[in-house]
Length: 144
Image 1 (cartoon, rainbow, N blue to C red):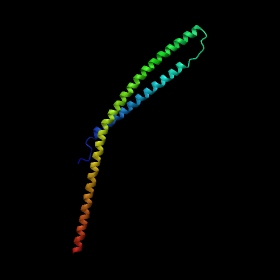
Image 2 (cartoon, one colour; image 1 turned 60 degrees about the horizontal axis):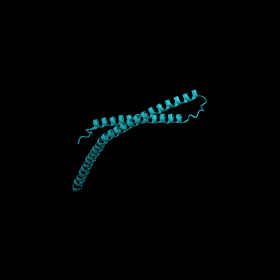
Image 3 (spheres, rainbow, N blue to C red; image 1 turned 90 degrees about the horizontal axis):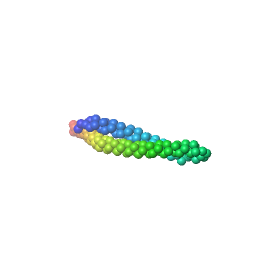
């Protein structure tokens, strides 16, 4: 049996792909979290405007600010949906990469177990041969 795992190169490639997918997932999660935090902050800011209206100019200014805030909030919601979609895609990519590497990891573990079993069997055979040789030599000395 070949002592080296014949698919080791492919396994390394799959693990690199898995690491890259994990990095992409982490970036997507970070972006999604950042957008959600910005949206929550915008909602707080939009709800916290309890300024007294003293003139029509201040009413127009507040209306313009609220309109701008609503527009920004709509943009943030859109960005949030995009970020969530990207995160879901990155998660799917990571799961697929992990699935591809798990099969090879199991094959590698099985190969390692077979090599270890073969080594132990060879070692036991050598020990049996040594013990048999010693026993026969001792028997020959007793007969003489």
